[in-house]
Amino acid sequence: MTPQLVAIVLAVVLLIVVILLLRSYVLPEKYAVIWLVAAVSAIILSAWPGLLDTVARFLGIGQPINLLFVGGFFVVLLLLMQVSLELARTRDELRKVVQKLALDIERRPHDDA
Image (tube, rainbow, N blue to C red):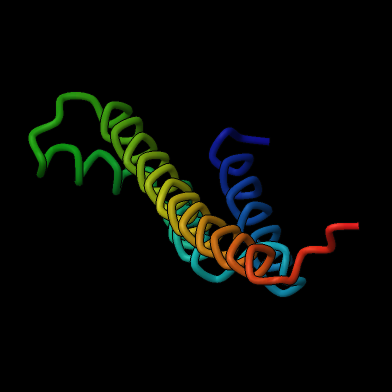
């Protein structure tokens, strides 16, 4: 089995896993977009390895592998940004719920028994 064939098979497996996770509602749609783009990009770059050379030359990058690492780093940064935004949203929602609960508890009549 050639390395190119292994890369194509692994990229297709990644795409199938992302689709299955999306269909079973384990992976939310907002996260799936980046994973789907990454999987399709991996399939394209695996099937046509000369494409990476061409894009790297066009962008003025000496080694195509450097373009691949920069692309992977960018995808990881996007995922981290997405998770950070979700965490901030969840923190704000939790704060609002806790404040509302505290006000409800404070308004309840107290038993002095």
